[in-house]
Length: 216
Image (cartoon, rainbow, N blue to C red; front, side, top):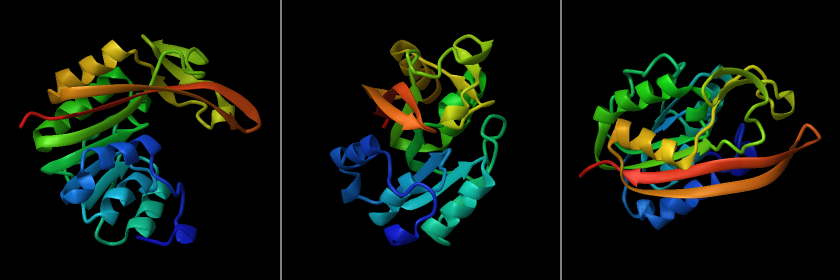
């Protein structure tokens, strides 16, 4: 793992993922973790620092290049459009699955397909971490509606203009994870905060964080 000044892209993992990692005792055992929409690897780096084998996929070529730099040669990284492909190279079995701030870019059908494809690849008791956007998020309704609760964003201030976003309520999010992964012992946290992007106040950023395990 690179020293912090040398890291490319985002330097620090999702704060709530860090809390989940230590609360669940994942620092006390090693395993195999896969990140769906891994970006530059900042979330995977937390696991790698504690001896986990790390793998991930992302559509962005620069993000994958940065992740390779940050995580080193042992990381198994694949460039893939997860809205249409479930990379066969990421076969598992996986002891942890991470999808922080990625599934909502896929739309309903693509998110369901991706999770169903990965379900058989998850080890019994796999730790799952998902972060998605709620319907009261700043971005919801800003752009072209393309499906129920789904918009092609017109928000250049957030850097997401033209991207698909699917917004969820708690019941829909829980149902998604139960139907696709048979997720057990689900814990749901709500998160709302303000942020400034491109000089614009983005309020609220509204997320749901869902954690749970696959059947043992």
